[in-house]
Image (tube, rainbow, N blue to C red; front, side, top):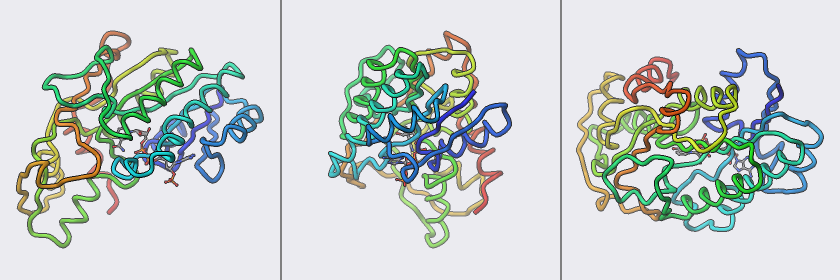
Length: 280
Ligand SMILES: NC(=O)c1ccc[n+]([C@@H]2O[C@H](COP(=O)([O-])OP(=O)(O)OC[C@H]3O[C@@H](n4cnc5c(N)ncnc54)[C@H](OP(=O)(O)O)[C@@H]3O)[C@@H](O)[C@H]2O)c1
């Protein structure tokens, strides 16, 4: 099997390459300098030439606040890119994996959200990612759309930011009124590989298990790293950002639960493993 990974230098792209290295699969890792997913001609040419069986799209404009001001770029990377990849995949009978986000929901509720709940994005990032999902669904029936949240892995992320900040701060204020689920790229990549192996097409939520606030997440990071720092809970209003943040953004992996099983760990277990292997 031949698998094309786009955005391969990102957090998820790196983890997928690591996990696939132990399998009998040929990987074609690309990032924007090798294959710009926003360029329809480049994508069609590349896909026809390399003929992958599966395209896993890990490329995205993931800077939520910047998306608010970079509207065209956000639409190009998060919506047009997946469109180009889905239709190029369809033209050669290949499958497409599109990774999406909890930001497709409004985050105003107080219950877990399943794949059957209604989307209502509130930000440019969320809207463009939902348009990306819709293009993929429309253009290629052999799709896997996998929504995740609060992702960390090999790259810049909240865990590393907290650890770096602790090097020159005695106390840190962290938002305590946004609830979600920290998710390791290890769990997400394992689920994506399982979906492909089982040809379990469709829309899936994939986060680790359990819920917490950013404050709880920070506390657990410092506890596991044995860092002595005063963490002070604060409100979203104290940290105004260009893009609205969801208050309650908990995805339930319902489709995994009712199809072939949910292999994700609790967010605390995965965070512990991540921190044990973290080189910083
Ligand atoms: N990070 C999160 O907390 C989070 C939460 C929910 C969902 N997700 C979704 O999960 C997926 C993976 O996220 P991640 O954290 O692994 O992302 P990431 O680390 O930001 O990686 C994205 C990669 O895409 C590349 N890229 C950007 N524009 C491109 C283009 N036009 N063509 C090809 N590659 C391009 C980036 O390259 P440059 O760095 O050179 O721009 C980067 O290597 C994304 O779909 C994201 O929306 C992420």
